[in-house]
Image 1 (cartoon, rainbow, N blue to C red):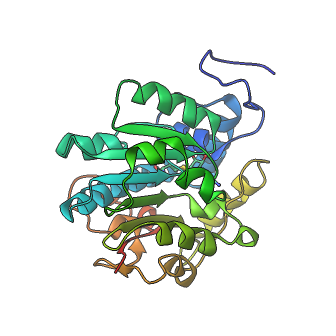
Image 2 (cartoon, helix red, strand yellow):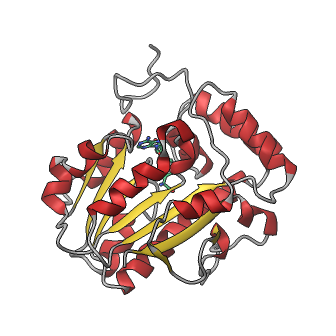
Length: 271
Ligand SMILES: C[S@@+](CC[C@H](N)C(=O)[O-])C[C@H]1O[C@@H](n2cnc3c(N)ncnc32)[C@H](O)[C@@H]1O
C-alpha cells in the first residue's frame, strides 16, 4: 500500500475515497488523499457550491451545540464526527462551558487517528472507533462510560451521517436505539442529505459519489428524515434546510439560495 503521510493508519486503503476524507478536503483540511481530492473535484465540477454547503453544515453544528447548551446540555455524543477541522463540538462547547464533556465516534481510521491527536491532553473529550450500526460498541465503550452520565440529559449529534446508512441497515431503528439510551430532556440534532426540490446538478454530484467505489449516499425525502426523530419534539423552526435552521450570523446561510437546500436539519428534545 502506498502511504503518503506518516499520520496514515496502517489499515487505511488509500485507493478508495472515504466520506470523511472527501469532506475534509471540501472543508479545506489536509487529511485526505489523491483519490478523495479527485472525487471532491469531480463533485465541485458538477456542483460548484459543494464547499460552501460543507461550511453551511459546520455552521449548523455550531448553532445546534450552542442551542443545546442554552437548554442546559453539558455532555455530547457526536456520531460520525469526521476528521476534526475547526469549530468541532468540544471547541464550541468547552469555549463557553469548559466543564462540557464530549465523546466523538467515527468508523473512519483517519478521523479517529486525527481526533486522538487533537484531543491529546483534553480529559473532558474522547474518541471511540466504532460504527453507528453497532450501538453497544458505542454506548458501552470505555470513553462513553468515562465521560457520559446517562442520569443527565445528553446532546446527540448525527450530522451528515445517516445518509451513509442504507435502508437495509434500518437507520430509523438505529437512531431509536440511541434515543432510547438517553434520558428525558436530551436532544438530538440531525442533518441529512436530500434530493427534494434541489437543482439537477445535485443529483449528478450524488451519482458521482455513488460511482466512486466508496461510501454510498442515500437520498431521503423530508418525511423519512423526520421519522428519525421519533417522539422527540422538534425545536422551532422544525425540520428545515440546514441553512434555514436559526441562522444568526455571517456564513450561517449561504448567499446562494440553492446551497442552503442540499440537506435537512433539525434539533429535537426527548419529552
Ligand atoms: C460528511 S462527514 C460529517 C462530519 C461531521 N458530522 C459534520 O457534520 O461536520 C460523515 C462522517 O460519518 C462517518 N460515518 C459514515 N458512516 C458511518 C457509520 N456507519 N458509523 C460511524 N461513522 C460513520 C464518516 O466516516 C465521516 O467521518
